[in-house]
Length: 375
Image 1 (tube, rainbow, N blue to C red):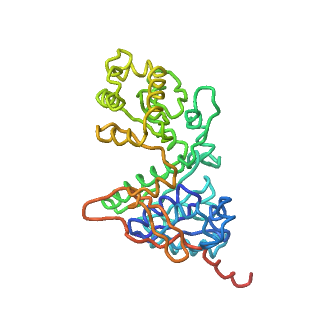
Image 2: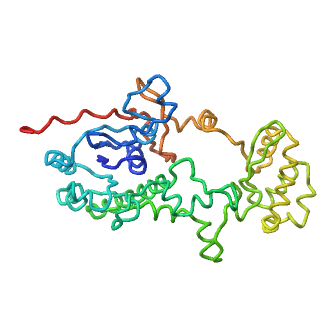
Image 3: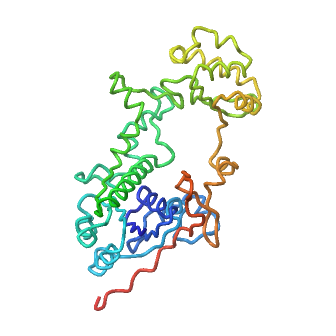
């Protein structure tokens, strides 16, 4: 399968790497200045000695493994002609233009599919195909309710999540739409236009928080890392040895096992805590007891005992600790040559097939094409 990636930043390139990991040929078509994320470097990157290609930032590397780079200036007739020739042999095009911009560049679905009726065109926008607003993740997190819910508590400042979650949610929506379109093409022989916007993707992912409002009329309020309808679930506790941990007791049976592990069986018989509904009503009292008791025990010993008893719980890890854990090994892409290490986007497995074992590193920005004669 051949994929032409006209998209930039995160959501579209995530989809491009997804297909590259499944064995597709992905051609990343960039303007002469390149994907803007090539320049989004952290202070740690700029301060450290250069170990990778200068045009490959860590942010760019997050979504561009396994691709080839091709620079085309789509504001020129030559650039457009080159794109049209490539589209004739492509299966999928990924685009992230504001509404109307693709048409100006003659890179829109109608233009490209006229040359290739089997073409599947995935178009990402911020607010839908008829809204000119530019969509950026941080703004969408604010507008879709995520920042409000992610505050440390009621009355606390709203907080953006530390990864571009709305971009990633939109990427998943686009993957699903494109896979459905590919399946449909097998039956009909026709391509399709698949449109995904960041706002709809964010709203679709509010899940139980949205349902709470729609069913009850009650606007969900921030609880820090706590859960609105399960207790204890998500709150961070600090053990005597400094270990920070999270509990996720989703059933009354798991709560009883938690009480046994903490040597507090009476809590499981307390009317305030016997059922999840009661625990939600008496959240503050239970969390105060848990904070005090967990603060008096060794966190690593407790986590081992909870695992033995089948109670969902885990240590709070840094990103580095999470990636260094043996369970993360299958998700890592090894560094090669002058390229950085990386992370897979494909996390599923199947019987009889697998993702590509080895991918090329994120591509350097290709040299611009030669100037047109007479310019």
